[in-house]
Each structure stands twice: as structure tokens, then as C-alpha cells.
Image (cartoon, rainbow, N blue to C red):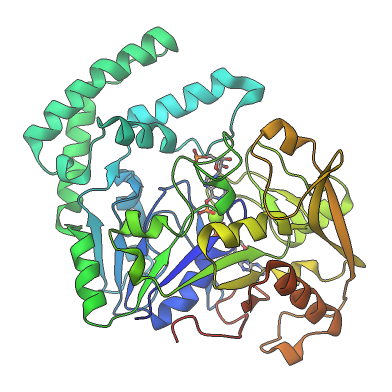
Length: 431
Ligand code: GDP
Ligand code: IMO
Ligand code: MG
């Protein structure tokens, strides 16, 4: 059995897309299991960039099966546009098998309207969501009023569910937010069209995955967001609305935990965050600017500037525990080149208390935590051509070693550039 889960260990944008694309060479099936088009996963192959929001990051390879799992919330318009764009660019291999879970939930126009109306109302206290309707769609799922892919494909069921939802959503939009209502006929017609376009992709993806596992195929599960955006374990309420930890691959893919062999946690060599919420190691000085500029830290979904700071090992350690991470993939190490000293946060201090393996749940406490830093020497050499550990300067190796020691987890991959080949593969998670 060689089924691998990839997840983010921080606040998203760790470089999951790049690593999934790379590991997809060894996989037969690639499964997205949670989130929606709040995700932006960037792949760079032969110098050409592709940003995926819904389609799994295995799509650029031939002969793969790509699955959008039941744990996802799917905006069908965005999905169709993404597929069409890939086809136009000749990046959708004709032999690709794409499947969408019948049980995945559909993001509707009123989810997007509610998301933005709520954020506007919160003003300075806003979460800083991606405005894609993610939270409201998951709310309906948990509330048992959501519309699933299977519902969208059955006109009578869709009509009834949509009418029922609109009664409530339009009341909320008009009476609570003072906004315009959404129109039944318009949505019904538009979404019936989307249903017809995606009909052929709909399937029971859980049994499909099970069949491939039984046949000894390699399954790669692609997480979105990061451990600290998890609805249960993240910096609530500044989180997304799904479980982003590795366990979510089971519920969101429809497989059992006994089918997972290893979990690779993607860890950026420093920390970034988009949107609001506490960030203990945030840097607003010239080093923050260095990370932002050298790392091109702009959101792949919304284009927002990402906040940047030193690597926070408290967050990484917690992520390792939460997801049973068996190997770390360290990304964007090249971005640190040129910094004289590099700091790593080994713990938080608040009064007489120290936190080393988890962040305090009380957000007020978390916001007042002071970082405890260890300082390491930097390096000036260009490391983007390195392909093995021996190619790296001593100081770079020392940084990797310290991360490994602090996390108590092996570093199995080091990424030194955005390109697929700009990578040091130290251990293969499928073997
Ligand atoms: P994801 O959401 O975790 O897939 O990450 P994003 O794609 O949102 O953001 C990661 C960004 O860093 C993308 O622009 C990648 O092309 C880029 N990237 C990934 N790995 C590396 C790396 O090792 N070095 C550099 N310089 N860029 C990288
Ligand atoms: P990938 O998969 C970084 C953040 C938003 C916001 C919070 C809630 O590319 O790593 P939402 O729209 O989900 O309700 O927003 O979560 N967020 C992400 N930040 N990377 C992502 O995805 C994110 N998806 C959501 O910025 O703070
Ligand atoms: Mg991203």
C-alpha cells in the first residue's frame, strides 16, 4: 500500500501544488478532499505557470485519474472555466479521467453574496476570506440544506431544494443585510446548464478510490489550505470552514484511515498568512519585505499581499502532531538566500508561561505571545541549482538539520525554486 496525503503545515500557500505535481509522477490517482476555489495551487513546468483552484494538481501528467472528493465545495462555473482553460492551453490530456463526487456540495451564488456581505458588515474585524462563498456553503452542508452534485443533476430535486433555500437566503440577504435578493429563474437556468456540462464527470468517487486501492494503485491525496486554517485546530475564527488536517483525507475522500501509508507536511522555510488573524513571527521590517518580494508572496487566488515572517516551529510541531506527519517537504528555501542571519521561532512566551508544541486556544493570549528565537547563520550562495544535499552551503544544511531536529520529523524533500525540477528528493514517500 502506498497512499500518501499531502497537507500544509502553516496557513496555506506552502507550495502544496508544486509538490503534488511532482509526486503525481508516481501516483495513479490524485484526490482533492476538502476546500474549494479558495485554494490556489501553483505549478511551474518547463517555465510555464498554471494555477489550479479546483482541479487536482496531477492534471499535467498523462494517464492519471483526478478526483474532486466528497469533502469539497465546488463552484461549477469556476470548475468548467478551469477545465476549458486547461483544454485551450492543451494541458488537459485527452486520456485524463476526471471525476467529481456526487456527494460534494455546490457553491451557489447566494453563498458568495452572503460571504461578502458578512465580511463588509464586520469591517475591521473581518476574517479576510477569499470571498468565494466557502463558509456559507459548508454551513449549509452541516445544516443539511446544502445542494450536492447529485441534486444538481436531478432537475426536480434541484428545483425543490433551490426554492426552499432561496426562501431563507433571500430573507437573510434583504432583511438582515439590506441587499438585493437573488433570482430563482436565473439561478435555476444557469445551474441546470452547469449540471449538464459536468454530468459525465459525476461518480461515486469513494468506491472508485477503493477499487484502485484494491488493485494496488498509488493514491495521492492533495490537501488545500494549511493546518492552522483548520476549522477545529486552527486560529479560530480566523480559519477556513473545513478540516485541513490529514485525517480529512479519509472523510473527504471516502476511505478508511488504514489505507494511508504516509503523510507529507509541506512547510515553507518561513511563514506567510493571507487574511486577518494573529501571527506571532510576523515581520513588518525590511526582512518581511525581502521575504515578500523574493518569495513573490501574492495570493494565487485573490492577488492579495501575503503577510510574511520567520519560520514558526511551534505551528509546525503542532501540525506534525495533528496530522501524524511522517515527512516534511521544505519549500522556498531559496527565498532565504542573502539574509545575514535567519531566525526560527522555537517557542512562545507569555508571562511566565512558555508554549513550544501548540498555540494557545485563547486567541487573545495567542495575540500577545512573544516569539522565542534561535538565530542561525544565513548564506549568500544561489542554491536554486542544487539537486542534492551536498550541493548546498553548510549554513543551508544546518538550517535544514535544525528544522528536522525541532520538528522531530525527517525532511524528505527540499524545494529551491518554483519549477518542478528545482527540487532535492531525499526520500520517496511512495516507497
Ligand atoms: P499552495 O497553495 O500551497 O499550492 O502554494 P501557492 O501556489 O499558493 O504558493 C506557493 C508559491 O511559491 C507559488 O507561486 C509557487 O510557484 C512558488 N514556489 C513553490 N515552491 C517554491 C520554491 O521552492 N521556491 C520558490 N522561489 N518558489 C516556490
Ligand atoms: P491554499 O490551498 C492561504 C484563508 C483566507 C482567510 C481564511 C478564510 O492555496 O493554500 P475562506 O475563503 O476559506 O473562508 O477564507 O482562510 N485561506 C487561505 N490562505 N491559502 C489558501 O489556500 C487559503 N484558503 C483560504 O485568506 O484568511
Ligand atoms: Mg495557494
